[in-house]
Length: 615
Image 1: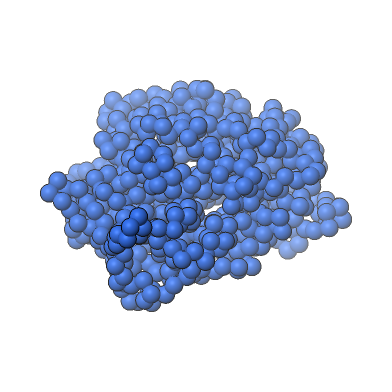
Image 2: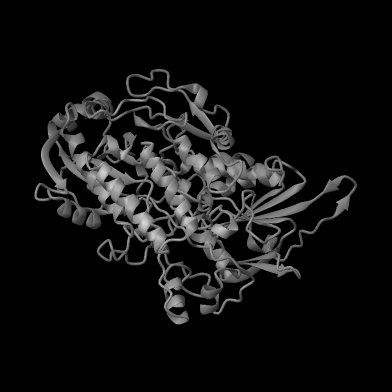
């Protein structure tokens, strides 16, 4: 149930033993990106002896048509009742642009804002977690939790572009996953165009093999409404006496105590609601599920992080943990945009009875760079040489070298590192459209970036070190001030060069029949004047946007490698603070991250219960 701040403020959630009955209290901290957090809260509250409080910074926004209606998926960006509307710091290698970093600011977090794509990464992406020092974290561990969170709704007439292998899908989980009842008419043409370029249709990409092209299912229910964390996990269980939610409540810090060995225990959580400060006492655990941006901020404001950074802001250090806020990795993309022929629009409207422009992307492909570019060997040879030189010169750490070794092997094994999506747009976002025009977009996504936030941090002296560190972390000792977000796009030039090759391939897709017949030949982006590699690189820097898939800022790695949490998701050198969200992923995955966020929540709940790893 949703309670007021006063109803939970200053309550003591200590253990009172009555026979075999034991009551404890778990506080879940959420700042709007807690897709995983509502999963954990719901699963933990299945035990009636455990009381669970969710602290949500945004509004509840339950049963809100703007959230539920797929046609309005982009309507809430920038609106303060739905979106944190973060911005990056100026990106020096992207023409000093500050890029929008939208994040959900309501119950259910970014599952209220996402573009509905629901699929899993390739198996090797998940197995990489174990190779980086997390025993047991592999595809075999996570796959059952992908299924547990999913309720796949099979479409009777799968047709030529919608095929499913039910063995790889869950059928009883909370999140409804389905194909839309009406499709755009571009799907089969997209499939055939990609086939002409050697990219085969794989039908169902949920097996751990994503190499190929397919029509992705969406997180929608039988009525076509958005299926997300709040309406599928929380609302059906809102009447539980032991599941409480406080909204419009922003956590400012976790209050901790430290024993003689320096081990930290959370004892209280402080939050602000309607400009008043409140405290709740922790009986068992604090679980951070605030997302890759806010989870590290809360840790830092609680005195857990890099001592140099904390001292520079006047925050007392309770636990020196330099990995907090580091190893940030973010998907990004740029797009080719072409005008659709007016007669095609009329024909599609007559056959479908609806205008599909403005709907989510309708076709997707994941392929290795070697499948789309003749330059792949030269690029990858050059990259390996650069990485080896940076290791020798100690420009990058041994810990990061382990990650790069996996990424280089990923390339050698021709795992899918390039993503393409085909999307009918009613306007060329973010530009102003010409009146009466509609467009087809082919977007190129960089899914395994080499660039990291704060990889290369020149430490000339303490003062400059503090300044440089602050630019990558919390910006102020005031916990209500948003953190500085610095993905450091294109710090490794290879990322830019790969996107240039992908943009070339986007153009090839639009040149293939039968997709070509849908467009006028008028290319709005990059435009016919942009042809050389340097011109395309300049275009990518101008057009680049985030994909809102940030990971790594509370990485699950060995402590010596800059880890923040161990394999049980517990923050190092704490007794009762865990992180359960995408920030724990130590290496990015080639997938839209919604399904993985739900799977992490399901797995995280079992880890907390002690049924996995015996924690």
